[in-house]
Amino acid sequence: MCGNNMSAPLPAIVPAARKATAAVIFLHGLGDTGHGWAEAFAGIRIPHVKYICPHAPIMPVTLNMRMNMPSWFDIYGLSPNANEDEAGIKRASENIKALIDQEVKNGIPSHRIILGGFSQGGALSLYTALTTQQKLAGVVALSCWLPLHKSFPQAAANSANKDMHVLQCHGDADPLVPYAFGIQTAEKMKGLINPANITFKSYRGLPHSACPEEMVDVKRFIEKQLPPISDE
Image (cartoon, rainbow, N blue to C red; front, top):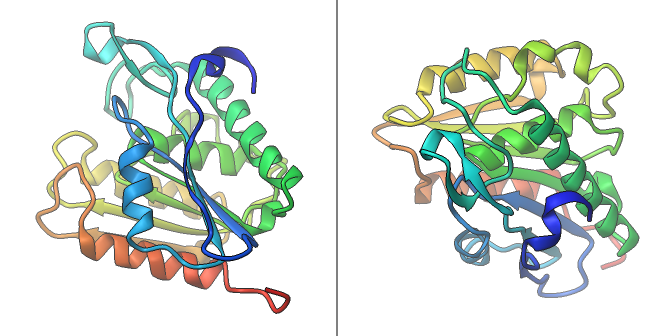
């Protein structure tokens, strides 16, 4: 790993119950850690899948009066037209690509890896999947947005993931990342990858969080995109 990720502790991991032939790398939201998400995935685990929930480095966040907290990149505002930390987003994305490479070295091919995240982590997972040359199994994007959206479609010109499957979930009562922002993101995504492979699910009354119904949908998506393989 490179850059400011050196200071971040090792990821929270839910190991596969048998030989791991697939992996989910899931990125938490602003101010959080990977531990809670590791617990959530332990509750919906699939036997041949390893779940990796890294922790973001600690940095000052402009949105929160420059307080130090876990953050994948700086956030200046949460509106579609807010200025964005372009250098920080790109640096964070390179760190996630390095994490994917590490799993490939461990024996799990990238096309057997789903990248996902919640809020800021979901934003980073979408950006990374659209800009990497690593072919992924799909993306789980919860309560999030596409960062640097004005840089697309050019930024996705060399992407290996024009046919990837995406599950995007959003609560319609989200006060932090507005539901309309999620809808706009899904529409933008339809111009970047095969629109038939994008599933957008909304949850009535859900604020900026996850819910059991949503986690069942996430599990079904993982089961579909990462089926067991015959030599397990």
